[in-house]
Image (cartoon, rainbow, N blue to C red; front, top):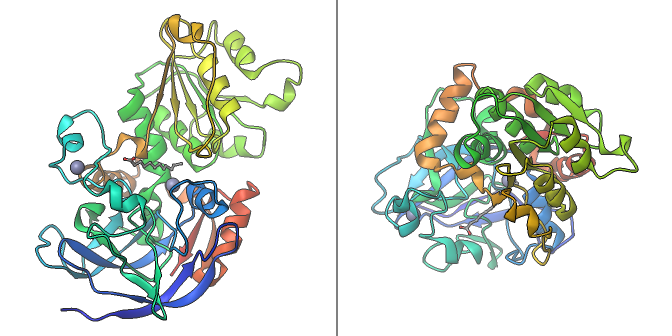
Length: 375
Ligand code: DAO
Ligand code: ZN
Ligand code: ZN
């Protein structure tokens, strides 16, 4: 039986308060669990969303973070797929390979540990984190803002030991989420026209995926023209700034410039339901499909006229890019190492754990695409 580890973590004590760096205790992994030394983590919009208090599943105090990479420190009883020293990426969408969802061949949304994960607990209904005896909750089954975390065995992707963890940590969320939405969810084909709403890490990943499958016109939409330089580097061919059309709905602008609308649109705006509507309505009549990727506030609702769907447009969504993590993430690492997948270009800032709140702020201000945090 392993020992409890004392280490540093950024703790979210309360909604809408900055994270605090604290000494915490991390209990050893129980059966079917893995304790991971997190080497690098990044910050995603969803962490900020939960910290804001808008997430109905947000529990406090907790350790946020779901985009990270690390090294297995120890494993619990019965763990066979990873061992001490393995390089891993924690997965907020696990892959058990035996639940109804995993076996369906239709979704990546493994439900094996969904109920406890949503409550900030390990599958046995308890937490491995504490601070001076007080329970601290897990987050998204990953909690990467801690120097050590405990996750379920089915919640880690084992990756090659030659992978640079300070880069591939971004494969924990943003990059597969956008890329996979193109390749797995929408199945965009060569020559298809694509509109991407929002050019943060997710939007840029959609653009990268669209270029990878040789989409035709790739239209990047953002109100910050600074983002267009990077969007172009990733493969966008056309840029639309809604602020340039104060008297016109942006969907109408796109429909006009594309002879009736795009084949696919992707909403990566960070949860704005008006933009979700625009993304649907810029799709081509008869076949255009819109994929919602970003997470809106829990009580928000989307709307459009049903005639939009009657006339053939399709509205759908995607979580973690439809990616089955244990199976597919090792291949994303390989694509990066083969020079096929860009990761370095997303990294605009570096911080140490103690400055993690600065990472949140810069990302919120749109100055930062992704910060990489050294634990
Ligand atoms: O209900 O099975 C489930 C789990 C759904 C998890 C969805 C999380 C989506 C977070 C994506 C952040 C990307 C912006
Ligand atoms: Zn995320
Ligand atoms: Zn499953």
